[in-house]
Length: 393
Ligand code: SF4
Image (cartoon, rainbow, N blue to C red; front, side, top):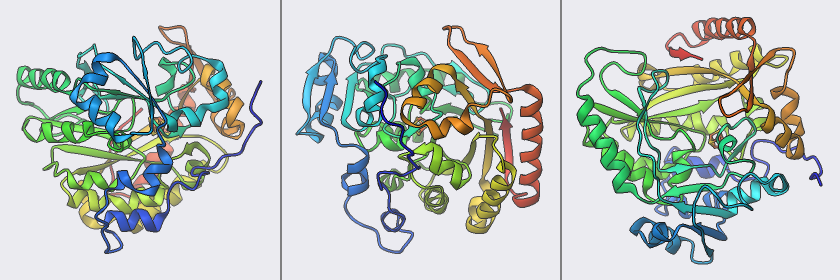
């Protein structure tokens, strides 16, 4: 049975309050001592009542920390974090799509420690310390590999992952030539399958990664985020971590970026993150073509030009990522957020491509995409000429 269609907007549960976010970040001149992760916004995003854990993960130091952090949660033993039948790949979970994300955690040990080449946003994709997200963007590709439900899996074998990264960085040596990823450092994406700012509400995994990259002068961590988590300001990354705030026009974000921080809050936080030692870039993503999209991006880029201080602009760069979508996700979304599909599913503009695992992915037709990228580049040149585009995809 399908859930009655709802019309959620970006923050339908009232998770985030701009004034609270800015207070917590210090942008209103009052910094709270209480960590953001222990505050009301974080509590509304994650109300963990059930933790599924592999035995080794539950027994690990990180696992025990997480279990202690959510003392009211029911602990359920599982053989494999990849196979939890009532959480993964079960169409019935559309009914409780968002609830699973906020109430369930999975603890496991990461088995693959492979560092994969990328060459677009980053030089390398690091083996991440999580998979899944408590936010619920309607276009998110993360759940495709797990089926419909998508609770966060936290990997607890942090030392093995950091060891693999350290060995890869040592074997790779210094970067000899600049490229689109970075002038000097090898860039490792540490958040391919989730949002590191959300992960930091659960454990110190993100902090451990940020701290590790301080020791590696030839490398730089990078992650995209849609959550303003002021606790990350305390990590002292010393320039070795790039945070990429994802941006889209606020109207699109309210429709599509469910449970995320509002776009103005992400922009307002940029200077604080720079001052705290991060490199701050922006992901203009995903670009969704709908009536009025060009004007909406024009407004957003004007807003960026108005609110970002010169020191942020001087070091900023952006990625442009056009929407890709997926037939299965389209079907899921029709069950819980059909309004999103009115803009995401545009067969007249999109072409389909069967992926290696048999899924049907859709992206804008080549000509549509090319013209849209050119249009957006022109808007950037006119409204935010300081914004270097690292790449468009
Ligand atoms: S923030 Fe990123 S990982 Fe989380 S739901 Fe949105 S797109 Fe997916």
